Length: 399
Image (cartoon, rainbow, N blue to C red; front, side):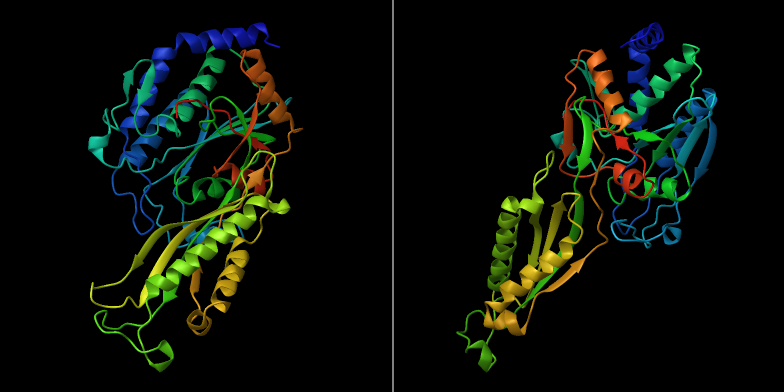
């Protein structure tokens, strides 16, 4: 039920529409693209964006802490996704703390400022870093995911402060890098000891309450063949003849498809808000020359799974063993599986106060109070699993 104070804050937000859009445009203008795994952030855009955010928080009375992440110092554990070799220098974390009266529950507002690459510039109608407005929508990389959420949460806090409302509980605002790759920005916050009774990440959810998300495992399967002249009929492989690694890779890919089909109907892979586990071959590399039997093929894949799955690698490995057992060549030359650090899925109980508060807020605004899941993941995985903080997402529409 909305109070007079609530209505005052909402009126201030409504009256700040142009300011919110302008602030979002400033955020979009910073080219804070997530670096590739073997790269680092080279421009000053990342620091400059955080300087803007930090300045906004300081103006509102927050105490600030800023640091760069040394990935080698992060705790590594199953599901953490920690890559100790990734260079996150020049991509600072900013955390602002605003003390309440001590009479209420504490809250974290968390948002990532990195964005995925814009792709081919000619495919954009608008400059991906221009923040153009057309028909009531802001266009640009991060407008939804999730510089729009950062602008919204900062303006919400600003309006609360302008309304003269003193918060009963402590409020923490975190803006972090690298969610689009490793989520180590938020993990660093958790490992530095930041805690609250609940957290909210304003990722784009079409103004629904996100309570569950799948985890991820990425990797590569190498399939071996034997080189030979493609214009010469080879003897049988047991007599030293060529073996086509592409043909053998087809068997492996079919095996992965069979595994995905099995997961689709297995009872332990079903979830109220999430699709069952998947595994998708995404990149294939093999062969060197048109007249040579390919001797090696690499199949990159992505596997996404519900929170209840604890070891997707083990299941993939077992499937590869089954595939190899049905082929004499593969049985003697089994495919090799390599995987990166995996990231766990996460979910929050519907009965948690933050979930019910989110639903109540939507009702008060005349919106449908829906609970949803997300087929991928967000930084909530670390807030929930590592820090034990009940975390939801409610954010803008626009996809």
